[in-house]
Length: 507
View 1 (cartoon, one colour):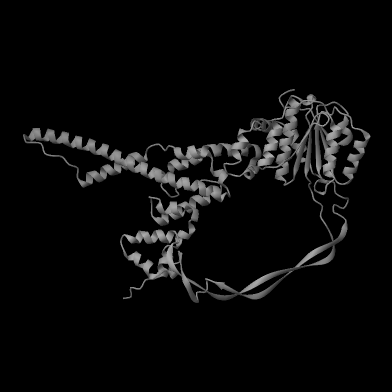
View 2 (cartoon, rainbow, N blue to C red; view 1 turned 60 degrees about the vertical axis):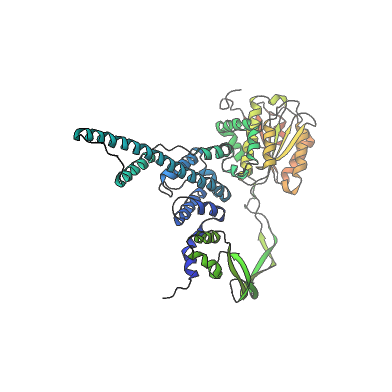
């Protein structure tokens, strides 16, 4: 009978560990519950479920007694929906989940031990009382009472059952650690929807957003937008660019790329072709393990050391490599001249001009800010750039490019915290916007002008706007309040008149 060491069999035996993410391997190996295959399969199940944006099934490993507090904490915080397709966040959360399971296991063990002692004390007292009564009846001395093995086994089962039937309480450590991020993400998701994921799941940007004085304004404006479907309809109308009669661009000469795939043989040095030994190294490959490492498996105490080295890929192994040939496909590109039709871009960037004069104070101010918020949401959803101008009197213009990043969110919140006042210089800010859209990046922009219209539009401005329209720009106007024909009507077409004050809560 052969007693040779079979490294391939050992490799197959522990192949299931490869399914466990490297970032969680240490915690999974040291978890004090279940077997190693159970732990790996259970963690993989939890990870896949969280990446799908949901909690795992109720019958998933570990048992409800162990997983209950953690599951309840995650449910109360609503963390699962923020984990969808966020591997880094899921792994960080699972590390705390594994620690929570270990804490619950220790707590259950202590609770069962305390309950068992209580039951044993009651049982000893009952048996002692019976012995005293029986000794008195039989007129003999009382004998010492002790619990036999069957009684201890029955009491242990009762203690475990009593502890298992206790009400599950959410894991306090997970609640404390994740409640603040969960609250922040929930608020951001309420405002920006799925776009809130672009803010990231770290701790760098979220607290700064929520502590900004404009954040509460943003929440109130989001509620206002929900009550004003007219605003949403106006924003959705942005970007519907005019198309030619035939619906396509003019025919023109274009250079079309032509690609060819060619194959060639290439000599590659690789470890996958073990034709020569090049030294030793540390790895987890059992087929190349030195005999000195295999000896550890035969020792009753050093066996666990071997498993730890295997998990850490720290076994001393031969380093081998060789030469092989591989077929490499090379993509070669060239161009040919052809006549075709180049599609037009359907939607361009958005430029918002907001009147911040004294006549806009009150509810018109709130409507204007709500429009900026909804415009940003729409621009981000459609992957369009968004620029905002806030103006009042001559030379009083604030301009920002809005984006869902740290700088853009800061600009948005600063604008929402801005208090309106001053005069009205619509001509000056319009000239600034026209200068911007002369550039190629903004030439086909949709300009949204929000104002009460109380400013004149000189002929020179009207001509400049007409030239911009010929280059592909569009000018939408929103007149807050019905004041008849104003300067806004001379530069914008169409002009939407907002006067649904009843839906906005009155003026």
